[in-house]
Amino acid sequence: MIADLPFWFGIAMAFGVAMYVIADGFDLGIGLLFLLAPSEGDRDVMMNSIAPIWDGNETWLVFGGTVLIGAFPLAYATILPALYLPLVLMLFGLIFRGVAFEFRFRAAGGAARRAWDWAFSFGSALAAFTQGMALGAYIDGIPVKGGVFVGNTYGFLTGFTIATGLGLLAGYALLGASWLVLKTTGETQAFGRRATRPCLVLALFFLLVISIWTPLTHPQVAHRWFDVPNIYYLWIPPALSVLAAYGIWRALARGREALPFLLSVALFLLALLGLGISLWPYAVPYSLTLWQAASSASTLGFLGVGTIVIIPIILAYLGYVHWVFRGKTAAGTGYGH
Image (cartoon, rainbow, N blue to C red):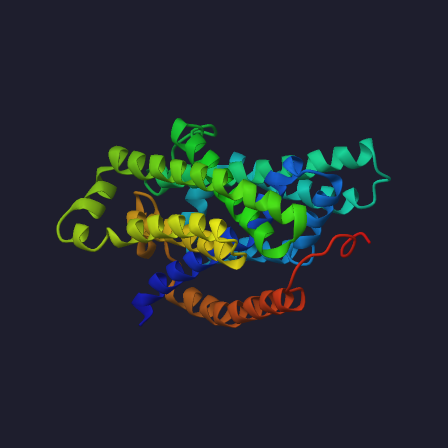
């Protein structure tokens, strides 16, 4: 049972990442679409649709960091030096958009409010793009020798990481647009419908590029997907992704409101599943496995108790908030009114 603890903490990390990407992804997506909204009133509705929940969504980021440093300290000590710059820029983006969120509603209007609109959108774009670049650098592999990072500060900056950064921008924008379809009405919802299709096309394009690029540059990933007997059943996640994308398109055509968002979430989860299949069992691709990077059994046991307690609390809190603020976001109500 003790030998299985690194596996279960790997699952906990994956769960935390998935929850963060979905929960914070749609409100970052709102920021990405913010300046494209038809009117000031639409921007007010967009911001009010995420106001009760946006800061709670980032709890998963804290959870993931805590599990990483507690359960996989060697991975933490290796990954962080490789990704200091994109992660610091990500934090600046998150802080910037948080400040803009609060001050926008307190601005008198005119130029001051437009400045905070730009700040909110810029912070969202910076956070999303740097997250994507960090993910791309992680997928591409961290240079390690003797358990120590041996790369340089700017090693994360490659064509592949730029592609993953742009891909995550497109994916978050897809979540944000479909969230507007779910949570708003009138012109704001119509804007969400118009934005969802191009965001879906861009997200699928970058997903395809990354899915081809990764096995071409990493033979171990290619073997994982295409060797017999893996190829007989690993075609299922890509096939389900195609079905999810088709479902989003059809749901928009039929005027559905909840289904585009739910299928967008499913598309993200399938992409994360594909990533997990490609990188298993590495904590630091392609150098340290989960077992090699894990803490001692006593540390994992202690941390496991806290993890079992805290995950249901976070889920209950977020579930309660979504339940309390369920339904459509109306114009002229909510945060700042």
